[in-house]
Amino acid sequence: MSSLRRRVLAIVAGVVTAMIVVSLADLVVGMLYPMPVGTNVRDAESMAAAIAALPTIALALLTVGWALGTGVGAFVAVRLTPERLLSVGLIVAVVLLLATISNLLALPHPGWMWPAALVLIPALGWLGAHAATRSRNART
Image 1 (tube, one colour):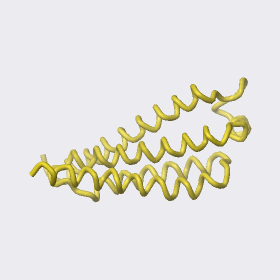
Image 2: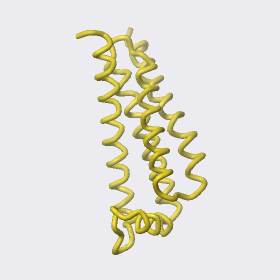
Image 3: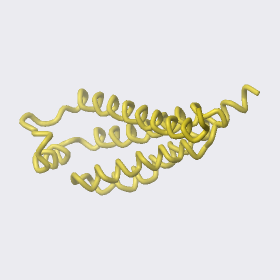
């Protein structure tokens, strides 16, 4: 398999892994802090009201879940490349950051979530990718 193809597949695997982790984190937060009764997840106004009703801790946990998912996805992507390329992990982090920005734009969130996401997602993406590059060096 060509090196480019492996890198692309590693990025896809990293993004999918990140999305699974984010979804699991969202599920856990949803079980701890359920949406108000009658929330229609397909209606932007209903979702905006539900987000506004959530306690700050629930929103903080969601933000941490986005960042952790990014870190795990970046780690997986780098580990799947034989060269342990930091760049594939950073691409995963950029994809997740863009998805998060899209989410923040689509529904009103508290203002503090913007800087938190814009700092935590790239930071954990870099940490995850960097950890994966270091883990190979530790074995050799």
